[in-house]
Length: 105
Image (cartoon, rainbow, N blue to C red; front, side):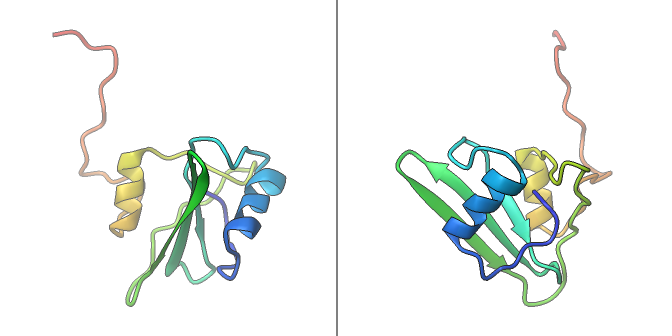
């Protein structure tokens, strides 16, 4: 994820942002999520085996609860947080149970 992105950019433009601005590998297994200034459009770019996928979502009403990027220009989110974002929730959804790691039964 990063700050505001021009939604006219397609696969080539977004992969250049990933490589040059975010200094990350667009061919990695990460999903790169971009949002417009009005926070009503999202594009998701990711590489799959031999080509890019580009998802685009436009809200007819409302806005995405877009988080502020770090000083590096990006943040990392979990799959659960992506689902929250796409559902109109904040990433710090207080109603969700926090995952437990390293616990034994």
